[in-house]
Amino acid sequence: MPKLSNYKIDNSSSVPKYEQLKLALMRYIARIPEDVEYLPYEYEMESQFGVSKRTVRRALEELRNAGVIETSRKRGSKILKRDSSALVTKQLSNNLIEGTTIAAVIMSDQDSPERSNSLTWQITTELENNLAEYGANVAVYNMREQYWDNNQKLINSLTGKNIEWVFVDPYSFDDPEKLLADLMQAGIKPALFVIDLQQQINHSVIYQPGIDYVVLNNLSIIQSSFKGQFADADFIAYLTNEFDNNWSAPRAQICKNVAEELNIPFKQIIVPMETPESDSKIQYYKVREDASINAAMQLLPELKGKKHPLCIAANDYIAAGALKVFNEHGIFVPRDIKLIGYDNYAEFRSLNISTFDFNSTAIAQAMVELYEYYLHDKEKSRQSATGKMVFPKFIRRMTS
Image (cartoon, rainbow, N blue to C red; front, side, top):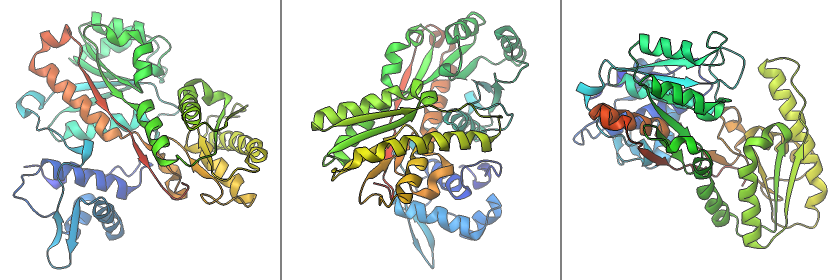
């Protein structure tokens, strides 16, 4: 039976502590025997996790709202639901997993040794948390560090540590095909994270035998969510900047598709974004905010005469800038316009922006399951490809 002490809170993470605690408790619930009906008492959680009473109570409130637990003053929190969507985890074979090490080969999204809140870093952290419960480890290789200036250095390090299986985010690299080919030639099994089905189709490298992958079924789920949630819209706007437009173009296409199906006008606004003066987060946020405000200002004239406009931003950064402009110009959200971002960034959760959660926990768990398949039959796995699919979830907050 797993112990509560197996789960840790990362004090350096930008993810709120109550959110980390909630996810830890859901993983704990998914793994304990069904005859265990109650969670530990609140004071035990405070002690085990080193968090405040307020943090514990906020995490339990989130679980109650999700229907996972119910709480009574006398007996504590009773478990009602154990299969909470993708957080349910299969029991792994401890004798296979224990003592092993995998690698996360990633490219950070910023010039800093610190972990960011990007999805790739979230998945890496969740992989560490998942495997730590089974006595396994993750060696993290941030290829943005200057030392890893060629694939051979990476492979020498991997083989020196007897690492046979790696998680790779291929879209971070200029030449992922070469990296994957070099890994497989060295006898190292790669498993990729693919952001959506269309990218899976376009990225032929993942069809090679021996490369596993987890697909986030992003585009189709988001499109169906928009159609179902906002069928009364009479106008759809999509805001982005030139820097983000390269990777966010499929998101714009979703909005255009929905507008065509609803037979309503669609407007895409793409604005320039200045290069930050430095690599500091403050500069990074400032240039993004300036571009976001510029995009929202260009949208304002388009809103005249619209009764149910819907504004979709390429990510939560842009949505935050748009929200600022709307508030300054007396446009009430969501009464006068509905606003949606993407990515569920922790930095913007206090703004209550409707968004999509790509569920790094579920993605990491799917990766762990692929690793388990590999350990069961290494030779067969090296000759075949296994794929798993994960679905994002629309989070409706105060802006829609």
